[in-house]
Image 1 (cartoon, one colour):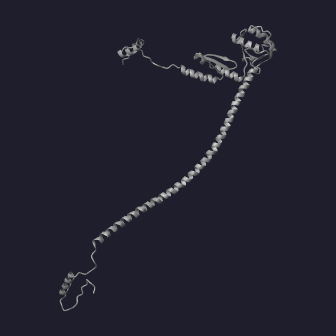
Image 2 (cartoon, rainbow, N blue to C red; image 1 turned 90 degrees about the horizontal axis):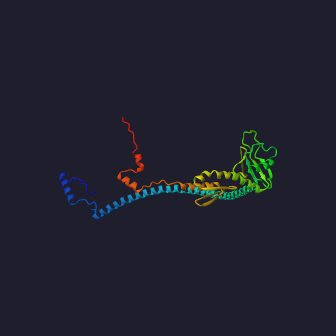
Image 3 (cartoon, helix red, strand yellow; image 1 turned 30 degrees about the horizontal axis):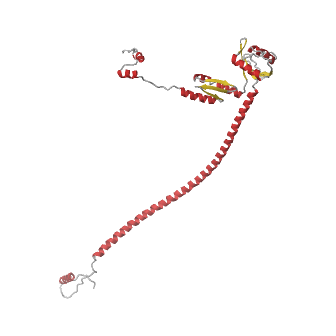
Length: 331
């Protein structure tokens, strides 16, 4: 019969008594379900539960870290792809830069060759201008002679009129290789007459005529003023005009100057002399002189002025201004 189960048998005793006897017996001899739990066994069970909870938390954290690593892996993949793309772009840029470098080198080489060519061209142009000026050294230019006054023979007219205009008897007489007026003949007689270019046979006589013109100024033919000057190339004439346009500034800065043939300006300032062949160089030099010549605006006070200010009195020169009457309108 299984333990703990009370079975009432009919043995002739009353049922209540039988139940009471069975209860007493169970109190004295309780049913055995196994040995009671040892105290160390309970502590071990608690530790095992705590370890299991810790392991669960660690596993959860590891899982979270794994998910983060997966996100980082995807980011690294994207970064790697972007880096690869940037490398390709940089490689393209490098190839373009290499091509540009080659082109710049080629351009620099061309510019260097052009610079050399330009310098050579300027040198040749300068020599050509010098040769043209030298070929005109026997020429003189006359301006102001009316059209047709020479008649039909311009050379004979100049041989006759130039000694009279200059008051000099030339020995041997003046001889000309060629004489002509500049440009086409003008239809309107009201316009200024064309200049005359005369090439003398002897260079000394051309220099003598130019020296007389510089000394005497304009030659007078009745009431007409005849200008006699040297004949230069167009480049030399332009340079001379540029030099002459700076004469007002030279006078304003108290600079002594002189224009010599064919086109060079000689100046003297504070005992120092210089020669300029380029008008731009002279303009730059004058700009520096003008900057140095600008007076600095300074105010100087004498001891008497300071004492007058401290005592409340004004300077005699300023007293008249301070005592000037003023009018006040009353409203």
